[in-house]
Image 1 (cartoon, rainbow, N blue to C red):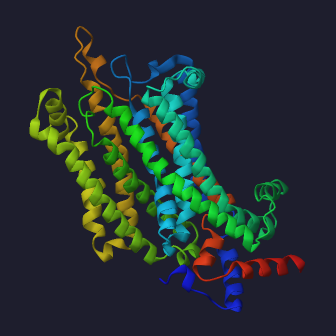
Image 2 (image 1 turned 60 degrees about the horizontal axis):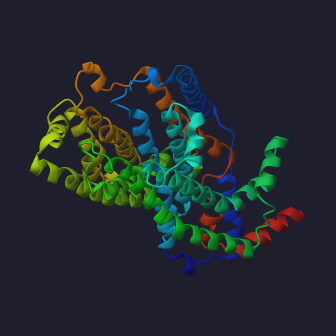
Image 3 (image 1 turned 90 degrees about the vertical axis):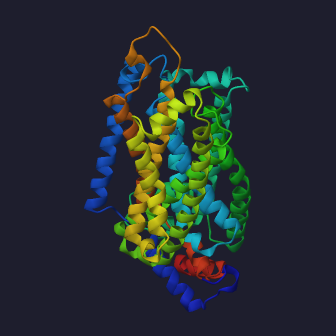
Length: 457
C-alpha cells in the first residue's frame, strides 16, 4: 500500500467513498445471532455477579485459596487481562508512530479490547481482595515500598491513557452517528450529542486529534511496558520458586504483545462474520500482515520462554528443581506442554506459510494463542503456590483447586470484558471512518464540505 501522505483521490470519488463508509461502518441493530451472543454474555456476567455476592457474604472461604495458597485463578485472570490490554499500545501507538497505513481499520478494535481488558484487570483485583471496602486503604495507607502500590498507580495511569486514546479518535465517529443515524431512540441521539462535544468535522479539529493521538502514543508506550513489568515484579520480588527471575519483565511483556495481537485477529474475524461489509476494510491483506506480526511476536516470546526455563533447568537446585519437574514431567506437564505447543509453536509453524495467514486459519491460531495465554498465566501463578516449607498442617492446605464459584466469577469477568466490546460495536463505529477515509486519500476539507452540504439540505 502507498504511504498516506502520497495518496489522494478526486472529490467525486471521495464523496462516493464517504457515502459507502457511512453505510458500511455506522453501527446497526443486532440480528438474532448478535442478540443471542449478548444474552449469553449477560447470563455469564450476572452468574459471576451472583457468585461474587456469595463471596462478599461468606468471604474467601468459598474459594480454594487458604492461608498458605493465597493466590489463585483470580490473579491468573488479572495477569491475563493486563497482558491482553497491551494490544492498544502495540497496534495504535507503535504502528501510528511508525506511520503504518494498514493499521487504520484495526486501531479502534485494539483500543476497545485494551480498555475492556484493563477495566476488568482492576475489578478482578478487587474481587481477589475479599474485602472491597479495604481498597481505600491502598490510597490512605499504601507504602511506596510495596510493588502492589506501584501496580495500582501504573494500572490507573494506563487505564486513563487508554480511555483517552480511544475517545479522542472516536469523536468524529460519534458525530457521524449523531448526524446520520436515523430512527434511533431519543436517549441514544442525546448520548451522541453529549459525547461528540460539538464536533463539526473542521480540518483544524482533525489536526488537533492527530496531534493528541501522537502525544498519547508517545506517552502510552513506556507506560504499557511499565504496567506489565511492574506486574512481573509482584512475582519476582517474592521468594517463591519459579518466580526468582530477572527475565520476568521481558518475558511478561513479549507474551502480552502476542496474546493481545491474537485478540485483535479473533476480533477481526468475528466482525467480518457479523457484518459482511467489513470484508472490504478488514481484508485478507490485513490478516496476512497480522499473521506475520504474530509469527514475529511468537518467536520473540519463544526466545524469552526458553531463556526463562533453560538456566534454572541447567542448575536444577532445591525447590526450583522440584518446581521444574512438576512442570516438565509431573502433575502440570500435560498442561505445560500443551500451552507451549498450541499457544506458541503451532501458530509459528502454521502462520509462517501464506496459506496459513488466510482468515479462518488465522482465527483458529488466534484462539489457540488466547487460550494458551490464559493457561500459561495459570501455570505461572498456581504451581509456585505449592512450595512453602510448612509442617504439621493438613496436606490439602498446601494445594489449590479452584471451586465452581471461583470459575463462575472468573468466567463472569471474561464475559464482562466481552460485553464492553459487544456494546461498543452496537452503539459506536468499531472501524474509524475518518482514519480509513484518510488512508484512502480523502482530505479533511472534503469531509467538512460534504457533511455541511448534507446538513444544509
